[in-house]
Length: 289
Figure 1 (cartoon, rainbow, N blue to C red):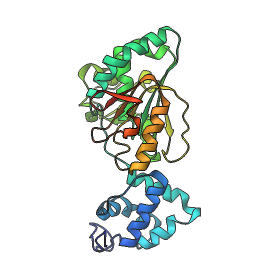
Figure 2 (tube, rainbow, N blue to C red):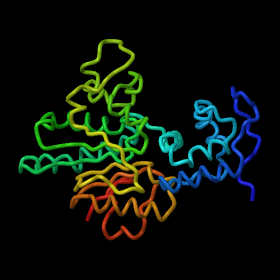
Figure 3 (cartoon, rainbow, N blue to C red):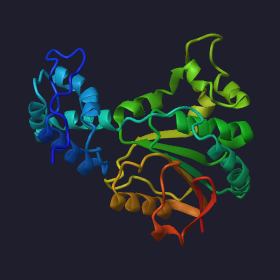
Figure 4 (cartoon, helix red, strand yellow):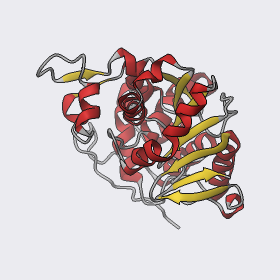
């Protein structure tokens, strides 16, 4: 069965009929699945072309078969990683699915404060942090409701598979208008060090200092120790096949502290095998039993 069109025109390309042929598309999809667990939809050749055409131009490659041969060469692992980064970059924004932050403040934050009073370590994880908007939303929410958070043993781990977006997360600088969805009081904290009217805003040091940014691929060994009192893994597993989703969510459950919270995306579902370990307490929010 033919899965892809062979004649998808690419605006601005040197050859207006350059397209991703079926075999190249299947090869790219197989590499992506093998290295990330993500499935490309069968009818998404236009996305592949749109996201990879600049890499063909950069490498001076004329066709997608040439590109597949290139990235399959072990000497070109860096370009294979760039391809994966281009295909796995997802939409994100500050305070996305804001009800999760409300649940965090209501149900977990009081317990974190008590744990800190007992001298316990607190670890939170934004798994699939993309360019950092999620993790800095969490860090700013923490500091707004708990100004002393920076003085206790608390760290937030932020991980993603894309080196490109991780560089943005590390720098923590964003267009000012991206902060518009954030509640006013928390947004004021994010803007504390910003010059009035400056188009770009860097998160203040007090927020950045809570966050550690690291590369992580869910299908490789996890460089995490845990346990974590909260894990945000939202809209990360949605494009993975069922077996890998089960492996990822089971691994996350293993990393949760007792009574810890797992936040997932609104279109994601936990496998039935975890029903005895995680219980739903709010919208797409689960507590470790």
